[in-house]
Length: 126
Image (cartoon, rainbow, N blue to C red; front, side, top):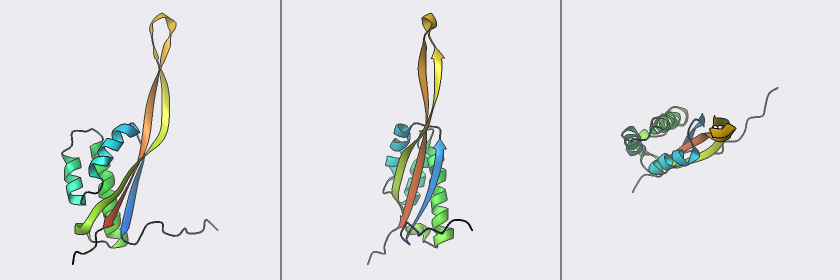
């Protein structure tokens, strides 16, 4: 039984990796994702390695996973890969409260995010 196999959404020269439920706000994650959009993969890995942002290490792992998917699953050339897309989505939001003065409470929101990285292979320059 089971489900029917879906058609491949990406092109033959693309591979992707997804990280879900990352404990950071989408705004902060989008800054790091915007930093690597359109870069060559080697330069993007360097930029993420030496970034001061806390979340850049997790984004680097997703990028490495996308590169490994391209190499192992789709037989793409690693030297010609670049970050084609880096999208950030909003996940769930945990709601907590913080006790305040005079019996009041204020709300604390702890957001989660999703990040999707698509790497593509550049065409040969003639």
